[in-house]
Image (cartoon, rainbow, N blue to C red; front, side, top):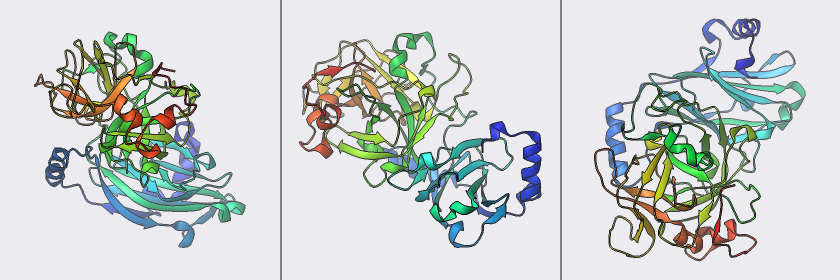
Length: 424
């Protein structure tokens, strides 16, 4: 069911079926987030280098298939449950037991029927048997499960987490600094393919970073995706990764009107290392062709770039682009001495744009449009001409010498020995 295709007659029918103002449904409610408390916790966590948080996690166990809450409607078993979180800016959900039969589906929509997420069906089944949803910008939502009468034995379904957003993706709250440059401005014209490789991401339904689709030497569109290690994606939670594509403004310096309706959900952890702060996963599926996603090229030679470009989501704002006109240097993380331990690429200071919390994991491109690192951290801001450090692709290639700590055997499975690939 897609609410955008609903007719007025269909809406009237639904409302009549489930009761005026959805009064017939069970409801799970949460009080407003204590913003001051959350802010204090966030400041402390971000000082430790943790990825920014945008939602409070509520663990629940709501399993209608085991509690006889289903009703029969038009030969379908149907269950609806409302979630309310006072003053929430968003809601998202985790189903850590999830498997749809051939014709069953899960629909999630705002209680006022003004917003919806696409239906989740058997095409969303995966080896983890989990589903983590993108955010819905509402404080009240309905989760709906529809199963054909003769398929109920083939379905697994339990809602296990409700994540109450208090800072994220808001069209009305400006968060990132004014010096950030929208990717849709003319500055980004020569970087269109690379821009389309970058996504804002959420993990565990509560933390956000930036990441990017990355090419491999086979040029076969395997959905490899990279971000920072400190964004805390591991083998235990990679299934919770949600990537949002093309979240950007429609006009240069225009109002914040990016859309969150192009997404992929779920991944498998492949490799990561704190040495250069990288993580590599394989998405559960390729992004839809209509999203026009590109696969970023890379250079593992270790050479300094003569100039560099960053593409990122500052403070989970719409996508931005930043420019460094001077050569990069090779250093230790948060240090200036050359070459230090050689694990990081240093940006001395941005000549145009900056980075911010939420930009972590975003790619740094050299003058040849190839990734040479992903953002680890630094001191740059709109008010400070200071440095940023990127985990070095050169270092990540061999990592710590194993498949689970290096890029080599994943991005060059054919053992070509290629030093670089271009954006696909």
